[in-house]
Image 1 (tube, rainbow, N blue to C red):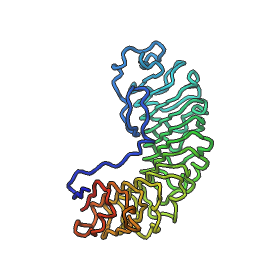
Image 2: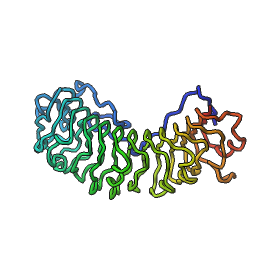
Image 3: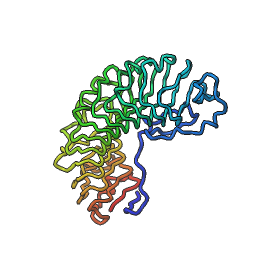
Image 4: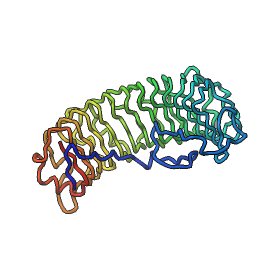
Length: 354
C-alpha cells in the first residue's frame, strides 16, 4: 500500500472499458471512445478516393464503404452514393436534413454529424427511422433542444452531447440501444424520468453536466454505468441504486450531497466497482460494499475515518477490496487515520490523504 499526500501524482479514474471500448473500423485503429475523441486523421494516409463518392468528399480506396466530408463548410448533406455504410459530416455548417437525404443508403450503419448547426425543426420527417441498419448516431455539438426521432430499432449508440436539450422523446422500442450520451445539456429530472422506460439493453448512460436537482425515476435496471456528476443533486432516495441488476460504475461528483441526504446503505451495492462522490459536502464517509475497488471522496468536508464504512467485520477472509482511495482535500491527516484501517484496506494500492 502506498500512502500519498496531495502533492503526489493522482491516479486516473477508472474507465469502464467493457462499454466504452469501441472498434474503430474506419481508421483501422482501436481505442477508448469518448464523446470528444479526435477522429480527424489526415485523409492522405488512406490514399486515393474511390470513384463511388460525392465529389467534394473522400472515400478511401482502402475503406470504400466510408465517406468523409469533414470540415468542408457544407450547408447541407451531400449526395451519398449507394454502398456507403459509414458517413462522417463533422465540423461543417449543416443546419437541416431533408427527408430524402439518405434514400440511396438505407444500409447506412454510422452517421456522425458532430459540430454542425442542426435544429430539431429542420430535421425532416422520419429521416433516421428509415435507416434500418443504423447502429451509431452522433449529433454532438449542435443546436438541438430535444432528442431526435423517431429512431430505428437497430440503433446501439446514441450521442447528443453539448446541445441545449431540455426535452426527451420516448426511446421505447429501441431494443438494441446500449449507450446513450446526453452530457452537457439542460435536462431536469422530470424530462428524464419517463424517457428510458422499457429499455432492456441500455448499459451506459451519461447525464452529467445537466440541471437535475433530484435523481430521475424509471431508469433501466440493466444499467452498468451511470454518470450523474456536475448536477445539483442533494439527496438519494432510500435503496435507489439497489434496483439496478449489476451497476458497476457510478459518478455523483460535483453535486450538493451532504450527510443528511444519503440514507445509510445507499451505496452498499455488491456489484459496484467504482464510486465517485468527490466535490460534495460530506462530513462522514458513506458505507460501501466490500467489493468496491475505486472510491473517490476528494474535496468534501470529511473529518474522520471510520473503518466500518468499508469493513463490517475484520478477519482473515473479511476485508475491503479497495484498490484506490482518494481522501485529499478534506480535513483528514495521516495521523488521524486509525491503525485498523490498514487491516481493512489490505489490498489497496494507493491512498491519497490531505
